[in-house]
Image (cartoon, rainbow, N blue to C red; front, side):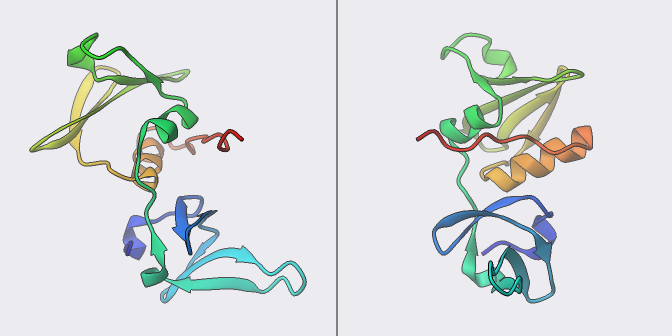
Length: 136
């Protein structure tokens, strides 16, 4: 279960095993789609949604580039190069969580899920993280 306070509109989540964006957030749950015929919102409770586990595929789809193990060890093993920033993400866990750095400033934060990475990116840059669709 994901708490309402952990979500923003546009976050990607799992609804009944399918990847869906959050379209609206309400007190009892989220709207993840609209009925094609009636245009009625399809609401599910917070108990019915699950987070998407962050992995290499999701990092690549979000624009991060993997670095060879052991190279740039102090800066993380995944890098995102944006127009005004470099975000490094280290998915090698320790007791503090993942290490992220933003333009060289280290931040320790536990980011395990796609929506958490989306929220972190938005908090830093005030823009949505573009995530490419899965390859067929």
